[in-house]
Image (cartoon, rainbow, N blue to C red; front, top):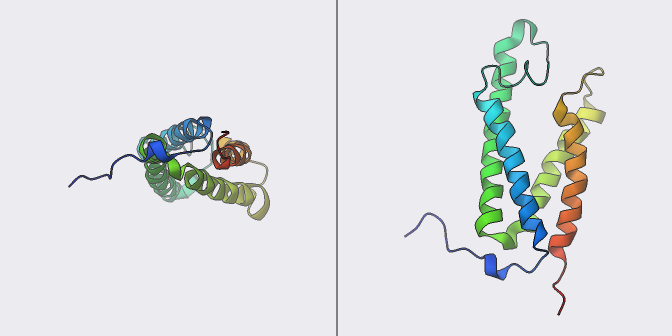
Length: 143
């Protein structure tokens, strides 16, 4: 018995570029996950330039929590991109939901008074790119 079932990559019929983009997306999810999980301030001060005030421990805790979820999602996307490419569309759809909600919260539902950390700008771009590669992954191969 093995931890992972055999690879299903041979069954993938979408554009070959989409799993490669998903692999890049996995790496770009894992890197911030590592930063939020292991940087002393979780990136809240050094990267996002947030004023943590007297709630420093709580802000860092929230950043670490986000890092944990990013690491879990990133690992899942990595496994899909490397071993289970027929699930590429699902992986891209999950990223669209995650980054779409992040965009909605950052810019519409709870904007932060003019301050936007780097991810607020990257998320809408990610949604558009993932939609493009999702469409490619769903295309049938030419005969």
